Length: 148
Image (tube, rainbow, N blue to C red; front, side, top):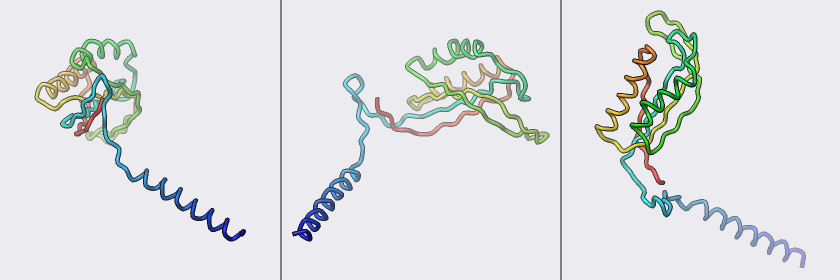
């Protein structure tokens, strides 16, 4: 009788493990909710990297100056939503090989692809360079599927 119970336990355990394994093989689908049921392809994730110090790595741009920039230049162009992350980065100047390390703000915007959105991103980059005197704002972009 003991070997029967042992065999039964093995069969039950095997069937449970099989059930667990099969649920892991289903693929998740991107679904919306009642407010925004749509799934959208053809969207872009744009990331902009703003140094919040001087080009040489000294000094800082105050949070109030960043907030004013965000409110005046970014939000009007992307009023439906955006994300700002605090970061820390480094880069090497090509001319003299000097390494600069400093804090940064990373702006993440998910948007439909198109000329108008690319113009909005470029206007934000130009505005930051004008306000701060920085030479560049890194823009990374890639295709994403989104679901709200």
